[in-house]
Image 1 (tube, helix red, strand yellow):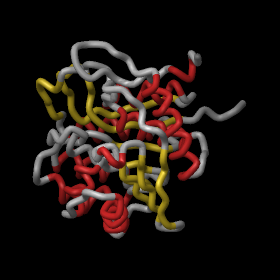
Image 2: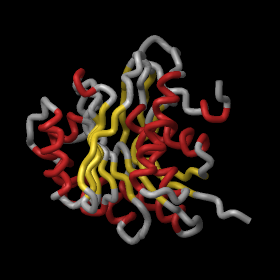
Image 3: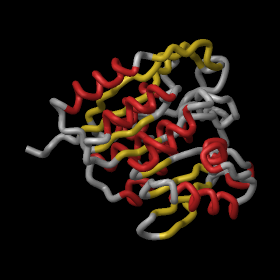
Length: 266
């Protein structure tokens, strides 16, 4: 019998189903991976925006992670919205013993610039989670917060990636969608193998809610299935591109990707 690949996501719930834990679990399923989850916070949100965020107690998050890993053979994990210093520290402590690929998506600021993290938590990310990360996946706003650099060009993205690499991750993927001239371009740099730009044609859709979460989840799923890191990133980008091309124009605002498209191809 072929072993079943298992992935764990640690992050916030999106009641509208487009991002966060919901997007991650849909992505895991679409890619043939059993998804487990540990909630850090609950949000009340829809396609128009976030109305409320409620953090769970750190010990509740820890209990969820411990329950999963004590019973299930998690092959890779990702973190998403952690909200505050206590939750970041609890997550870091809970995953530290796990010798599996760890993707850290430092959900601090949305692509549109909305702050999603309490200010004192930024240093906790640097101190606790970046050194554990196989792959760090910030957007441009998050890369600015973590490095203190102004990032307005491709050359500055490359410099920021190198500075982030020096903070401990084995690899960094900076998502370039926050700059018009970098739409469709992400920069990957690995401690073992240098940097490269990953390019695709920009996709004309306003319905991109949850695209960052989905990319991280797809990379995590592919790592759980045994793909090497760079191959997992490339496969995940293909998955996200397909989801964006079939994005769901639902609700009154920014709709989500179509997560299930590989199971119902054109």
